[in-house]
Picture 1 (cartoon, rainbow, N blue to C red):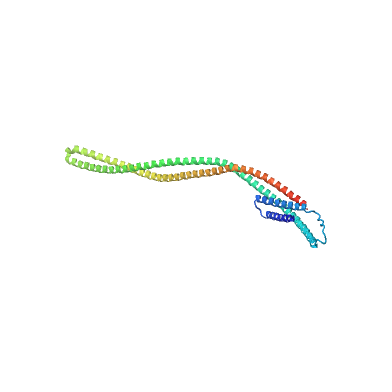
Picture 2 (cartoon, helix red, strand yellow):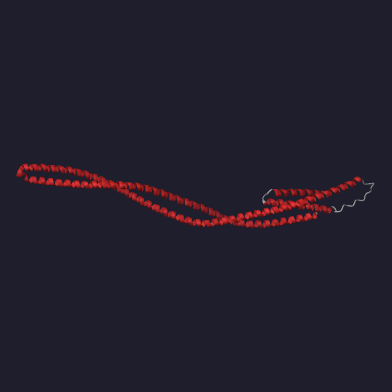
Length: 352
């Protein structure tokens, strides 16, 4: 059974190599546990092999067998002594490796436990932060919803007011254009009346000239032309009165034309301003519509985000529950690891 200590030594060296790798590289926790348990299993297997060897090999040196000096050669005794010496040295080396492996396994187990606790603490902190942020988002959503409704109401009222002013301005603009059309008609009527008055002046001048000629002829006729002279004087008087009336009407028409021209210019200026105001109100109305649409899109995006947060809430709850399960399972693994370490220490004491 001399192969048992050699195999145990190989297993111990392999377990020590695994433990050293475990302490040099920081891999994910499942691999750390797997390598740690594997090294401990190798250690326990090696210890059991060495213990089995101790049971088969007596602790005291075997008594030399009876031999006949004449039949046995001296070289056989030397080989037996050399074999026992080699086995004792191998056992001593195995014990040294076992002590070193136990020390490395203990340190690795403690280091893995500290790293595991630190990772769990960070994970618990991250989960708590996510839950707090989720609660803040829910509270913020209620505030933003109220503010959005208020902004939406103000925007709707502003848009309605702008549209009402736009309608009133367009109505006023339409009426002003109608007034301009009527003033144009009035100006053309004044011009027509002016031409009629000019014609009336010409007729009045002609009548006055005829009355003057009739008066001259009546004076030549003497008594026989007296009645004709009276008619000529009456015609001359009527012509003068008609001329005076025509001049007065012309003055009124000139004033009316001047006033209508001023009113027309003012209306054209007002229409130009009204058209500018209409364009500005239309632009403001369009911008208000775009703002309302942008606010609606932002509100939809916020609602989508809030819906995502609502969907994540059950996930966070399940994550907290899974974290508790993981902590419980890790606690069980730590208990198993401590038991294995205790078994390894007991094995080391047995090997001593």
